Image (tube, rainbow, N blue to C red; front, side, top):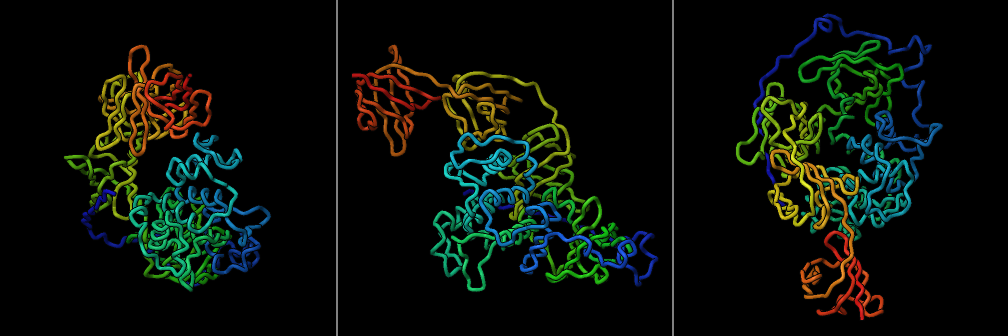
Length: 538
């Protein structure tokens, strides 16, 4: 894998501690918990019980409650969470999509990927499978054998999580690692790199006996803890309601925090839940100077957790919003943005996603002065860039024809009706009216392409199915593919042979490629540029 190492140049300007006059005068003194009078003396949190069946899992209660209040996990109604119940594959996929901020996208889709051959999926869940495939959480093999209601094994959960984070290539680089678990030999070879990374990132770890238990399953309580860890390491839109700061003052119905040398006030919900050291405490036990994490709902604090003073947000995925100062001059592989009083420079990965307010764009569409939100991985590589501007579209040119060639290495190109065009790596692709990737395009497809600045930006493709009759002029074999040269009306055409092509030679069904010979005459059924059925005549 080509490794891209990013450097971050940060120039900071000290910002003096600023206090609003509204907070400067009141003294730290006794007060009543919020809503005390309204509840007749009940401390906050007593009036609202999240789940009634989680008390026997004290090590998970805090994470279950926090994730429930954030809307990332749900129960079965009537206060039931079922913490002991094993988590199935579909639930794991849904949780990963929620934590990454992709659930809304999943809800807008009601169809499965065309390649899906697994067990039946209920209609409401089809969009989750489709988005999981589009985001790389599930691959082609998963789609062939996916059983949504089968319990998810721990090594499979590790794979889903690492893929959701976008670290599949990193996992591939660590497939030969020696894992630090006594049961490492039980980890399937294809999962070693994923287990290595998920442990290194402290998302999933072994037990007190150094066992990972790769073939074991996760309970819903364990799932809540795992995805709470993941949530704390990923920046997304959901985290806009998560606040971390130091308590400056606690009042009757509000808490004042010191955040980045500034004071900010937050209203407190009557039923606020407060945790310290995995134990629920009263709101009035919060002390000045405590470092806290707050979850907001409708601008009110509904959950407060007292965390360690030395707590550092070890984010795997971070988001930065600022003004573009400069893009690198050569190959547009770096971007510098101004964030308050600092400048940060990030390396841009080759397949970075660039989105404008009115649709997809490219890196070279970004201009100095644009306000952007950049999603950055732990190596400070820009993986996604959202530009808070509308992209001015240039004159659009349209081309129709058959794909003759597709080059997805280096600078991408596509050849349509013998004309070669530069192809955007972020091009929108639809195949048979379904959103697809560039890798789903095939030679022989019929396409309509739209170009901007002579670069293909949009492709609408349809499979082309047809039959030909002719004579086999040549059989071209390599280690991984077979092509037939077929003469039709004195013209020669070359087609690939599908690995699973149906072959019939002189009424002998289930024939093999080895039974084909030059000079044979037959009928060939072709999809795009690939033969899927062969009938050789006597």
